[in-house]
Length: 386
Image (cartoon, rainbow, N blue to C red; front, side, top):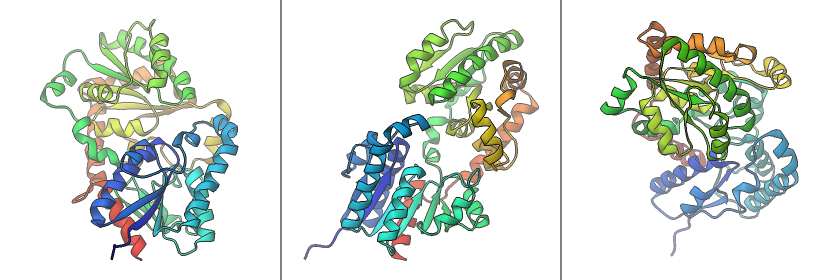
């Protein structure tokens, strides 16, 4: 008699979820050691692991409010396609991964129609930063949250949300790519520093920060002398950024390949960065930095009233103090950036303070005995059994 395959539905909403999803599939397959199948919404990496997707991920993976509004009829139709598929062929468990606007809409409606189906949310929404009431509402349709950041379980406890476990950030599996070898460390410590410029990945933030970061480098050159510059970006912005930075006195090398980006990280002395996951990459690479956030004026007005977190940079949230300078809105001007950044490139208390914080981040984010994907898979299976 053939053993029945364990059936797990996975639903993602963008390409970052695909990267978590394919590793989770590998870990679940290793943990189950028996027949297992995956259905739902997948990206290219998950499909390479043998999962079939109900529709192409690009149907729903859009960025920015304008694109969401334009594509809303398609996104809504795809959400209902996922819901109807899960309900028509009930799995043993459902894992929604990141992209809460899409995946939570699916989970809520599946829970109404399949009230006993175990549902796990992989990657917590930022309930600790804004819309904190969402945590309590999630109890109605999420049985367990898998958190990427170590402070998130305490936030769910405080906000009366569903059970939440820290499983580890996927970057912790890539420390060898982020940390320098002896030769790269020699470049990092050399007389002519390498500076990273990271103006973000969204078109709006790239437009708002690139010129400001360029003017900052000009002031920095007048203060500290010569240095090299690398500007890592995503492929869709590379041509524009090469053109936009061609006239900079300190012209950067623009790279869009991830291997080139991490090679630059391993040699870099310091970084100017837009707020985002890249600041955690820099902290784990042990590169002192400044983090900047600049919105359109109306978005900043709303953010100041809605955002509840004491900090907006991930490294500061992890250590629960302002270890990395974070500049917001009107503070993000070249004179400020250059004055704060220059000491980070030398043998100074400011640099030493950040390095100490990075060691603390390492300790707090460490997952012992399992990779993040293995821990996530274990908790998914435990939740399904309960």
